[in-house]
Structures are given as structure tokens and as C-alpha cells.
Image (cartoon, rainbow over all chains, first blue to last red; front, side):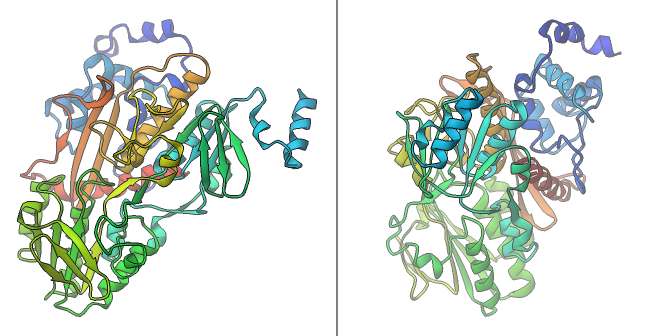
Length: 97
Length: 418
């Protein structure tokens, strides 16, 4: 399932070498304005750091298609293609939970 | 090296050569302004590159957030819930200079502070927010703002306007004046009108609100107007530019606002005046004739002065609105780009998101979002992305968006201030 959804992602990360935080993929840094890197009390917004990349990707695809109802996420997901979404998902998956 | 540092310390302490402060190996970044843009930039820089020497210049020990300050007017929050200090930023290794910047010398790459010190920089980030263009509305100056508060920089002005509303007789007319574009927080005046109406409905049910506008269209307009019709029928009257909404003069003694079409006497008047980038931007030479600061869309470097980056409300960010979310998002992009630039590398083209919630009532939220990328020299909307909440809400969406709004506020203030 993981491989089917994210072809070549693991090898891409290996090729890129140890990424620093300054190398977060385009768009990723905006997400933490709502999705806190550390858990925030009393927030109804899901925590995404440390979540499985394939879960984040499938949520983003369903938001984008409208299959999963959302507030702003459907409108935001439409700004990213599959490759960009996968890179962001892999980035958050690699962050400490 | 140790000897050199010691020598520098001594000369600085003696006040001999303050400009030499940065003449050491560590790259220096100075950040002017401790709001959502500047505070985020300073913190992110330290997180990305702990070896950087980062100084945040901010005169106020307490930051009062504009987002959610309209809820203070409606008694839904207290002003101290809007307030944040810089301990978290200091704890992250940022030096906080609790003073204001009085001058920027872009040739010498130095900032002069009100306390007499001078800071040199390799890169300067300016996030000075807004200043008001006093006098465009005849009679509206800083003294008039004590009678007819703007409350567009949160703090004492917010508290003053709330006190005036509470002291008003039931049946009194609240008059608001909204400026032409661009200005801080495009949906802000309409959220304010909504929440004042929400409060009036409970406490001053005979009162009405007149919203005089210097434009014919506004952010989330249909969502707001539908909400007003649904929740506050007959309470809010919006007067657009074409119907005489533009306020040209005020008389603070009689709380009178005069438009091109006539005069309105208020029981409480809230004048949101025209705005420009914070004054230091003009002094630094990074503001153009519009009063705002043009920047390139990758690292937000000024197109007018090298090595100075401008963030947030002060900057012209293409399609991006002047919001706290935008300033915070731009700051993180700018910090990552500066780390690259200081290492002699090229920063990547960013994608930047804006999200902005407004409350039409305590439990009724609406939103707008946008996704932006560099295109032809400016940040441009990615087609097909972004937009507002649907006009027809299903599944309790308005209540949900009100909850998202308060969750967002907790998250962004934690990320910005710690």
C-alpha cells in the first residue's frame, strides 16, 4: 500500500541526503500555522507531525476531490499536485510526533 | 578568535565602535518588529540555524494580537487573552532589543536604535506592520482617535472602543468607517461589524450599526451579508462608496462623520483610517510611493534596497492579503531562504498558503484561503485553489469553522511566541 501510493519516495529522500529544516518542500512551512508541530491544548485541528505519509497523502487527495468534506483543506489541497503533496507528506511523516 | 571577540566586547562596552559588532564569523540577522511576521522570522531562523546571531528589535514588552481583538469588543474575550510576551523567543536564543529602530542605513548595513546603539547586519528583516495615514480623513488625527477610536492596532484602543460601546445608551447609533484597499486584515471591518451587532442584539437591542465604506466590494462579502440577514436583520446598514460611503471628514467633538453625500452623528464612532507600511520602512527606503514595500516573491527581498527583506502587512505580496497567517507563513519562507542565501546557495521557489477565519457570531465562522507561488515577479494565486466557505453550509460547517478559528489562534500564537 505504502509503495503503491508513494512510488520512489524513499529512494528520492535517500538520494537527497540528510535534508535540513531549511529544505522543507515548498508549502510545508505554511501548514504549521494551523497544524502545530507540538500538540496544542484545546485544538480541534489534527496534529500531522509524525503521521504516516500515505495517510496524509490520501487525506489530501480526498480533500482535493471533495470525497472527504472539509473546511479550508479542500481549497488548499487544490493548490498542490500529487508530487508536491507526497513531498509534504513525507516531510511531516519524518517530523517527531 | 577569542582575543578578537574579547577586543570587540571591550570596544563595544566602551562605546567606541558600535558598528564593528558584527565583524566576526557568525552571520548576523536583525529583525525589526515583533509581530506575527517578525517574531516568527526570528524564532524560525534560530531553529533552522542555531549558529546565527539573531536580534529582534521590538519596543513593546507585550504584544497585543489584532486577530480575535474583535471578540474583545463583543465581550467574548478579555484583552489579556490577546497578549503575548517575548520570553519564548528569548528562550529560543534570539536576542531581544527592547527598543525601537530609528534609522536603517542600507549602504552601511546597520540599524540605529532609539537607545543609541547601532546593530550591523548581514541581512535585515523588516516586519514593521502598519502606520496610519493621518489627515486623509480631514479632522482625524491621533487626538481624534481618543474620541473616535480606530482600534486597528490592538491594545488600549480596543479597550477604549469596548468601554464606549458599553457606556452607550440603548438605541444609540454605532458608526464605523472602513478604508479603501489595501489595508490590514481585509475582512476585519466586517467581522467587527458582525460581532458588534452580535453584542448589540444582546445588550443594546434598540441600537443599530452604520458601516460607511470607501469601497464597493469587500472580502467574503456574500458570506457576511448572508450572515447579517440571517442573524441581525435590520441591525447593520452597509453603505458602499457608490452610495456615499466614503468618509471625507470627521468632527471628534460631536462624533460626526461626513461623507460625500451627507453627515452622520454617532453615539460611538469607530474610524478605521487609510494605512501604509510602518514609518521605519519609509525611512529605510523600502516603501514606494504607495506607502507599501515592493518585494521579490522568493525571499521577499526589497526590490528597492538590497539585503533588506520585508514581511507581513507592510509588504506588497502580490495576491496575498495582509493577514497574521500570511505574515507567519511568509516569515517561515523568508527564514529558510535567508539560511540558503547566507550559505551562498539559491533559495527554492516557495509555495505560500493563506488561511483566514472570520466570526459572524460567537459560534458562526467563515473562511477564505489561498495558495500562492512566484509568477512573473510576484506571489500569484494558484488557479483553481483557494476561495471562501460555501454560501450554503451543510453539516454544521459554520459552527465548525468558528471552532477552527479559535484552534488556529492558539496554534499560531504558540508557534509565533512560544
